[in-house]
Length: 242
Image (tube, helix red, strand yellow):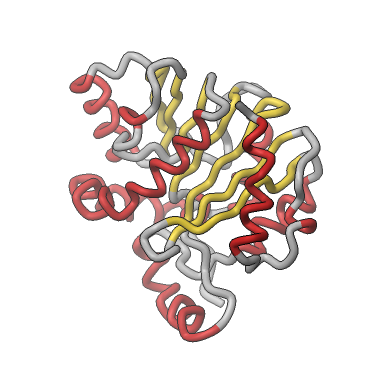
């Protein structure tokens, strides 16, 4: 197994990506951005966008919500700050350079935590998820969008082969769903609400965790590679959130 990613590698990688991140990834990541924002806005309120990057998603949030954005990369965050000023995004409460594993907010500060393409690009995903859960209010949600590694076959072989280069670029291409589901089971007070594939070609997945209230847990949904019927059942509780 390839070694874990480290903070220095992340900082170096995303400082390099900053000047052309939107050009390279903007269109590819757009379906994931839209899906995660739509899920967050079914709850609304005060939303923490972790790994806000260049701020490409900020204008897509409704003005009725208050958005706080944080990112580990100062060069990326400068782009976000410029975007807020240029586009007059008055619903952005604040932007700050911050380590996702050590969020500088009190417990229960946010109604929703959104992390787009982040959880595979932090040194300790479980510690990061613990922080997400800590700063989310009871009844709130953690919403992730990410590529999840294949569990078998040629795709899995390729992702593991590519992993060392992927780390130098700033992410883990072989990161599997089991790591997220095991975290939820071990954490307590967290349950899986939904996991579903997104376009293009199911390359990315939307994952929703509920905080502090009963819901359908991943263990009730069957295997991690559940079919569309199972995923539809997992999504059913969200219809009651209004």
